[in-house]
Image 1 (cartoon, rainbow, N blue to C red):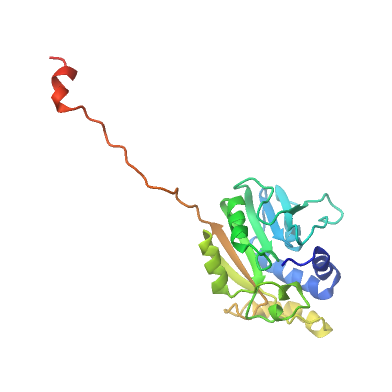
Image 2: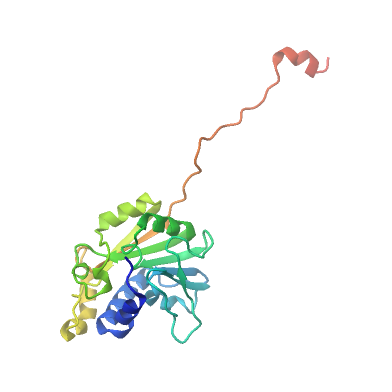
Length: 244
């Protein structure tokens, strides 16, 4: 079940903890995807807080928000690029997205398999997708005071297995939100230090969210392949086909 867009907006744009979470996740994303010049960038669910760095140089930025969640205009003070869409039928042509970010989309979906098929459809050859989900072993998935406390949390192996089953190739994974999901001033002030420390931990178990970068595996054509054989004339007709 998707969260309401008003609750998501209030968390990410009107709460200190939400702004800290936004900065932590976006920082990890920018480390992996520092630019998107001339590319088409799309975000599904409520991924728009992560897309602002790409507005200046990307050819197009699209914020896809599912119908059960609702939509809000974004970005503020600029031409709107967000659109309300059916969860598994996006208004994007096949193979036109270069970078896709899914946050608060997969774990809340009632049709995750069809959603992943739609992600695969819109992603172009050589494109990359980033799936951001609550970490089952982290603190954030255990608290309903943040959006990551709702929906289906994942372990790294569960997420990668599901992505491979839908013809994605995992290439990188990391985690973010090492600070506790607390509104106390001490934790908020220490957030940047905790995030930098957490990034040095080799295990992804400590972070509140998992981030898996994938590429698109092109499926071979279905059916059996037949090989044309060279047609040779019947030897009994040699005298008729060749001049004497």
